[in-house]
Image 1 (cartoon, rainbow over the protein chains, first blue to last red):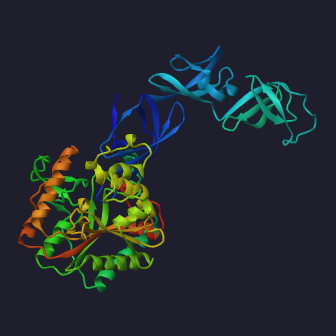
Image 2: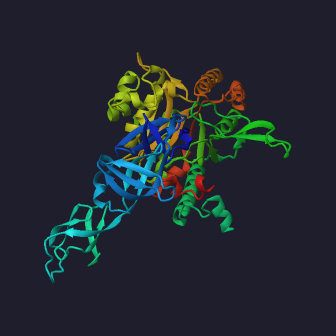
Image 3: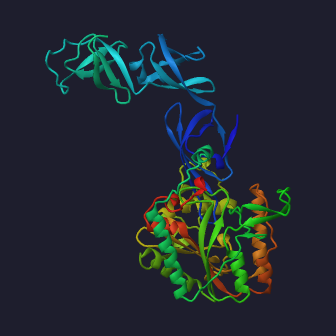
Amino acid sequence: MGTYNTSDFRKGLKIQIDGEPYLMIECNFVKPGKGNALYKCKLRNLVRGTVLDRTYKGGDTLESADVEEIDVQYLYRQGDQFVFMDNKSYEQYELPAVQVDETWKYLKEGLICSIVLYNGNPISISPPNHVELTVEYCEPGAKGNTATNVTKPVKVETGAEFLCPAFIDIGNVIKIDTRTGEYVERVSVKA
Amino acid sequence: MNLVADALKIEFGPSASWTHLAKYAALLRKAREFFERHDFLEVVTPILSRDTVVDRHLDPLRVVMYADPRQVSEGAEWYLQTSPEFHMKRLLAAGAPAIYQFAHAFRAGERGQHHNPEFLMLEWYVPGQSQLAAMQMLSDLANHLLEQGEAERITYRDAFLSLAMVDPFDDPVAKIAAAITSNPSQSPFPLDEAFRDDWLDWLLVERVEPQLGRQRPTILYDYPSSQAALARLRPGAAGSPAVAERFELYWQGVELANGYCELCDSEQLCQRFEENNRLRQQDGKQPLPIESGLLHAMRQGLPECSGVALGFDRVVMLAVGAPSLDDVMAFPYDRA
């Protein structure tokens, strides 16, 4: 494993501290005219998402982290594990539900997501910004009511529920913004 | 030609706008006007020299003065100057009147929002001038350039006491550390008296500097003797420690200038350089040559004088209200 010297410090650097991977999200060089150079850094823990403030002096080093992001396809869920496959290498990766977190709501078979690998093991997953899902169950649609401000809960193929306009019906395909969990539009009436 | 630029991944255009470059030029004229009015002699001295300031935290860029273009790594090691200080003081030792110059200065590894490895230094010296008079002149120049009125003055000690609730001369290192971080075990320096100046510098950057020069430009003065650099020491009043006659100008939390009542004692200069070399080696850095043209001149006699160095690019940056030096330098490091 390599090391980074303070002269290599910059935004985007992936490093490890106490065996955990971090992303350098900010690095400010400060130095009183006659004093020691200091590097004020903000580091985001890539597993937990927490942010650390750390200051380093010129010449300090940090260990580099073996972190890469790859595109994978969602295959299926097996108990507590979600199984994905790298379409290039056909390598399969398993992520426990606790790491998948809220993303399970969007995981339909075949969905392309990106996962972050740390030392070859998946540590987090992000879905695309928009996902299209088929409605499996909801109260009957109010015919002719095209207003979008009246909403109702709608259950989709993944088992998750989203608030959608009243005109949405079973079998409709809807687009959800995964960053907010909000309904965007109806893509088609029949899947 | 664009292909070449793309291949080098360097933006070929300037990073500063024409409005800012015009303001840069106007401030250069204004500064010259100030020194002409005060009867200074403008001088030009080498930026490449066999000597350099021996400072623990200033790293000069080395240049090999090869004689044979086929063997470019063979030759004497010279240095790009971290400030024009040495040559200007040699002029003073030779009887110069008040002198000033605009000089390019170089400091290895200094790159950030307020740092560029090459920058423009405005430096001036006045024979026979006291710290008080030197601070007044600095304040006048700042007002001439920035038009923010007379500079406020506060001693290093009072600034730390009022802005960080720490006595920089008397409080133990643990108290200095506590004023910066709740987690000193994760800090860049050990909790050890030997690292006192490092802790003070960090506290300065973290808690004091950001509050300096908020309303008006502010001059910090009377530094701890351990931070004298090339300033002379003044014995403290009964019972209090000696201070260095060193002063710095701040505006909007940004350090703009550093001044001294210059050290004239060649023996002391030698001792300080030797100590700095010891610390450089402790930090894993190369020592720098102790013997220099300046030391030689000081042995002959350097008259009492004050000297101030001002980072001109930073002044322009603040004058146009820009956040970064890149906004006022035509070609900063990433484009040079």
